[in-house]
Length: 293
Image (cartoon, rainbow, N blue to C red):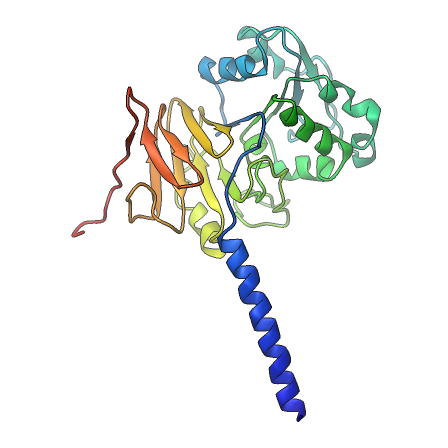
């Protein structure tokens, strides 16, 4: 056998492996946690309905809830963190702030103790790469998964929304305008998906297209401010005051466009990639087709 033939054989094997990997990637299922719930917010969370929904899912006003402000600018946060105010105003009474920028600390039982007792954990906004640097792959990460495993709720707003997915957008340490940056791995509680935030308010409605063009296996979800999705298993409902936007390489609800808008009360099935309007009887949402179609 000649060297050229041997090289050709190796190339063919590599091509086959690449095709198999691509096929597996394309068929990857977007899904939420098997147990528990995610509440993913597009930033500027003001609607009391969102906070009260999270509190209810955690078990009510007295349920133990952990707030994680690590995405923020400050190096230190304590139990006087100003972000607790809106939670208290909406009825939460059992709040604990958990924060570190030291992965070694995040990998200790002492640090995760409040999370082990929590029924809800919520990540505040800032820069999502700070959350990734502090918590990915640590004991904290495992303890968060355990919150869901015992039927609890995990949520986040803005940066705290994007960190919850398997593919993290705007994770570049130099610029939050870069969709695919130097940090792209999130906590993975919403698998095979990417979530962007501040969507319409910051004119970001086209930005997710870059991500799903390069990673067609992903479901892209854009959330405007004061809007959230509540994820249980393969489905999510939209709540809040604006819109959630779906980006997919496959048609959604009959639409042949690149993205699809959903409002409060609408539901999306991530397995079938179908959207429905909430009503006495759920009915499919009709897609908006380009002119001339």
